[in-house]
Every structure is written in C-alpha cells, then in structure tokens.
Amino acid sequence: MKYSVKIGIIGGSGLDDPTFFKDSTELKVDTPFGQPSDSLICGKISGVDCVLLARHGRKHSISPTNVNYRANIWALKHLGCTHIIASSATGSLKEEIKPGDLVLLDSFIDFTKKREYSMYGKNDQVVHIPIEPPFCLTMRNIVLETAKHLCIPIHENGTAVVIEGPRFSSKAESNMFRSWNADLVNMTLVPEVILAKEAGLLYCTIAMATDYDCWREDTEKVNVASVIKVFQENVKKITHIFLNVVPIIAEKNWDSEIDELKNLVHDSIQSK
Image 1 (cartoon, one colour):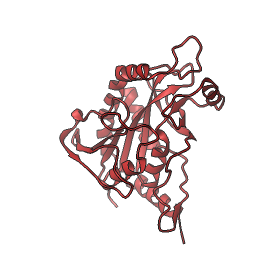
Image 2 (image 1 turned 45 degrees about the vertical axis):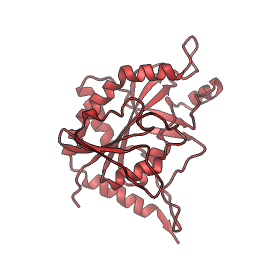
Image 3 (image 1 turned 30 degrees about the vertical axis):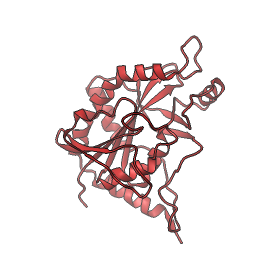
Image 4 (image 1 turned 180 degrees about the vertical axis):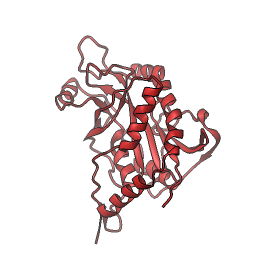
C-alpha cells in the first residue's frame, strides 16, 4: 500500500508557534478519550502536510499528569498523520549534557504513576505492544544527519527517566536516576511514545536539556524561570531542525516501515 506522508508535530514549552505553517487552519477534534490539549493547527511546511499540537496547551495550562495523551495521539492519527516529531524540555543527569544541549532520545525508563498507558482495554481487547525500539530508527537517522548538516550539535543517544511531575525531583531521586545510568529526567515522554506506537505512528523526539536537575553541586537548582529561559534561548535550534527534517521525511517512501508497525500492533492485540 502506498501511504501519503503527513507529519504531526508535538511541541513542548516554546515550540508551539504556528507561524512557520503556511495555509494554516485550526481544527477542534473530538475523540473517544475526550478533548486534546488544544485545537490542532493544520498547514504546510515546505509543501508537506503537517499538524501542530501544543502538548500543554498554547497557554501552557495543562500539567504533565493532566495532559490527555490518548486524545492527542488519537487526534493526530484521525487527521491522517503517519509520523510524529516531538520536542521536550528535560533535566540533565550527566555532566557532559549541558543546559541548552539537544539530545536525540533512544530509550526511556518509566517512573510515572497516574497515567493511562493504552488506548485499548475496551471491548475485551488488550495490546501487549513490544516497545523496543521506542523510536523510529529511520527517523532518528534523518534527524541526526540533518542536525549535522545544519552544524547543530546534538547528542546522538539518550535515555530519559520519565517522572510524574509537575514537581521537580528531590536530590536523592536525582542521584538515584543517575545511578540508573539515565541521561535525562523528563515529565511527558510516557505515555506519549507508547501511545504513538499503539496507533501505528512513526515517532521521534528531540529533547533539550534546560538544567542540571538538582544533583550538581555549586549549580542553581532547577526552577521554572531557568527552564523557560534556557528553552527560549535555544528553541530555534529545534525549530530549525524540524523545518529541515519535514521535507526530507516526505521525500522517502515509508510503506515498509508503516506496514511493519501496523502488523506489529495487529499481532499484539489479544481479544476474547
């Protein structure tokens, strides 16, 4: 089957500006799981159909726990998206990952507690989705090569511990996460990455380190003001990558990757 590429863009703090879209329209989408975080902005980037969604709402009024991840992913799928590229602010757990650095995530550790992790469960259906690899390897390679071409430094791999939030970590928690050999701490990756795979959407995330969490001595402990400041100072790097990645993704034939993921989901469903 030949698929038409349509790219969903999920913006974290600071990356929810629809002005880089052309011919944009705003849509409200009703889903079986309630309302998405905000209206969806449909438009084109370099002639490629895209859909932009602000994860926390355009006024950043939704906490990480209360983001309706299921509705967000369902809405993007409903509007015909085949891919999702996302951004997220994170805390660094490694000395070499400095505030302002970009990290191309390749794994995660789920430390959340209160979220809905599946769109299945009704009608006696359960999906045991194999999550590894969590991120589309081909999309990761495209993002990596694009960043290199643009001379934007990016860490090629990274594991994020995903915490419930909205509070930041205690020092004991931060050091525990470091002992797990994690690279970053984050509040929104899970269940977004899981639901994207359930929906058969190819997914990739660029994380930005905005702080050193609270483990590092002689460094300002993480706080909202510093997170926003660092993100706003560096978000143009992510935007620049996204704007260049979109047409490259659209040029490729993704039939085999999409079919493989659809078959994986189908084979993972257990029904009575």
